Image (cartoon, rainbow, N blue to C red; front, top):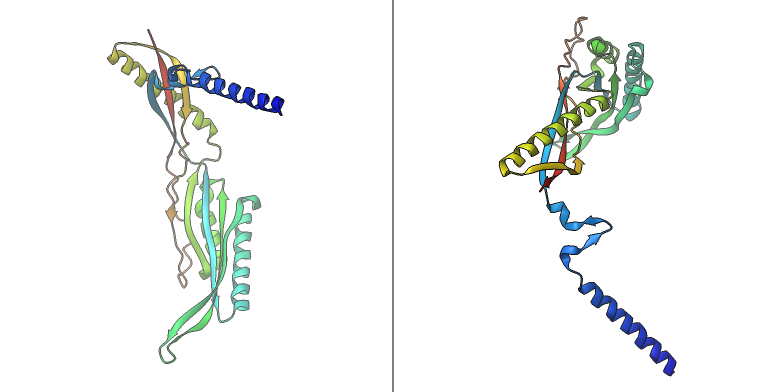
Length: 254
């Protein structure tokens, strides 16, 4: 019993000594590995931005089929037949199957208010099937739109066209170089104004990329509208910007 009591006292004394040792450390000397926690507050902190103007090489066409009939079976059959024709028109125009993706499918009741019965009555069913098609040859966008509208007829809906870059990595590299140069120029000016000598970077962080997506162009083919003339609609991808930001901390030389 005496031996157990001595063991407890020894452990308690060791714990007290450990706590005293920690409390005796000065906050200014607190370290994590070999990194001084206070060092993050020293130096000159700046942000830089790099931007590159590019021409889009990818067009994303958002389109669909909407069919409405008295019952579900008829509406679904009509929508499926029209969509099959649209898909064939896309692939025949050079769009790869892997670049066509279903985005939305729904079957909904269509109702109207019956004033005599004072209740909603079902007047039919609407089937909606929407897909996106990635067009890698932008020069063919107008021709593909014509082919799709002709294939789907009055059931065709073309929501919008978006433009982007298939592989923006090379442009991000250029934008990154510009962002770092921008940050260094700002830091050098601040150092000169402060009358100090600028040192090397001690911290670098890259901000979120700004995705290279061109503003969508919206189109709509409404039910009952005549099929457009054979001349393809003019489509211009224009230009877009690829950009990113960096945050850099520079040391100050004494």
